[in-house]
Length: 366
Image (tube, rainbow, N blue to C red):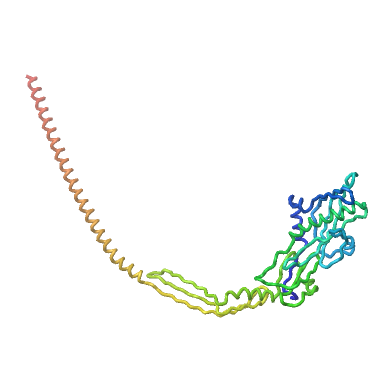
């Protein structure tokens, strides 16, 4: 790989982001609409603009004709430069009012030339000029376009570009040197060597780099530095573990510690490492059965005591049952005696009554 880091950004992702901004009413008003009024050469001039369709990115170098027609924010033409692309506004609606005459409404296609620069570790996209057909515009309208519309439009699009920056790249303090940039084929690619390595990657190596909507790719040397920085804090570190576990008649306890005396890792492929480590390991373990023995003694005392308590409880229950049985027998005997006396009395009374009836009946017969 002819570079230590490469960053690729594709126009499809940028178009999606721009379309999302365009669909949000608040952002659309800030980034794609505007108006301005001023005095130009003693004439009151008013201009309003509205981007009627989402802008699209064309990540290819501007043509010579576009460079020649582009207007800078200062109103001047701009010179061609490397690493530029075009932001297309398919339908820009413009309303012009200068002097007492009626306002003029026109919708134009506008190409905005943007530059690509690498600031630190972030790719920055900046609008630098606009290509607008002014062949039919009056001299005062041309001034309005160049001195009012273009500067304000480029300022708005600068805010749009601010949302397109590639995030800051930081891999454990990894630093890179000067970068090479390439814009073509719908992608912008930036590549650099690690800091301290002379020169910059060749543009041809960027052309052979993979193309994707977004990636950050590290070369072998950069990956090795990341790995080295990652394992460095582990050297000399000690880690330990301890605990206990119960089993059958007792418990076991254990402890162990591990120290990394040396640790080295080498990149073998983009997805694998060869790791060599020197370690010192110490461990200890023991068994504790005292709790189990005491448990058995306690069980030997407790079980007979429970048995004696059960016997006493059973004897008490038997005595209580016997007393209840005797009481029941006496009660039944008394009830039987009373019942017999009652029956005897009833018999005697019945016999006496019968005798009286018999005597009375005999006397009536005489």
